[in-house]
Image 1 (cartoon, rainbow, N blue to C red):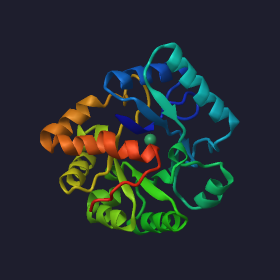
Image 2: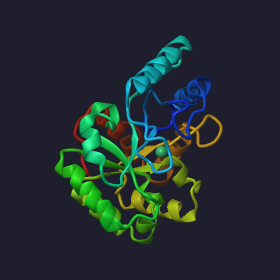
Image 3: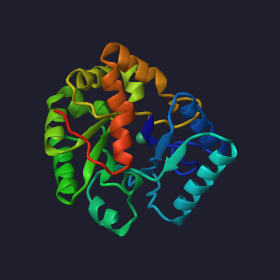
Image 4: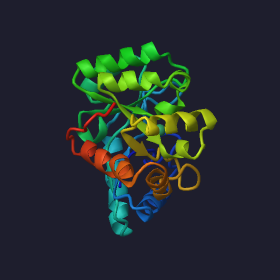
Length: 244
Ligand SMILES: [Fe+2]
């Protein structure tokens, strides 16, 4: 499996605290069948370090991959960010301070949980016009989409992808997010499920329980699409068929 949303880089946000946490997260991921992880530290988020991508991040990523080889953990970690979308993103993407997922056309974005649908769509439109494919992190957690799942359909129609959090399927973010996540799944609107893991203790990158749930309640083919095929295409910068 490929996990495209994971706060596995240590000491840069509210994710892994130290390198041994990062290694342990990769171990947990590997034990549940994950072989590729995109490191997505929060970037551009209000109240947090700006986390402009620089040499220090590149070195941190290299140190983590070296540690995984040393520990014989069969996981490769790729570069990425979870970019808070509130205007001013495009110039920072162009300068290299903000980056896409594994240098692809796919960009992982998040919004304020209270953002209005129109504001989300305006931001996505700007990114799409510039040639990016917005991958919306945990759409099921935004109030506007909980209130009206049709907004998810409209975002898809524009060319966005929807990435659900595995924890949402089990109710980790409340009943509203859980219902909305399953609404997207039953409506065929979900494109990718990722861990959005923050530590080896809580919100972990263990994914096989969620894969089993989707296989059991929906279908094995759908689970394979969401956990393996689509995220695998994404990190190779290949086309993903948008279904809506
Ligand atoms: Fe996240």
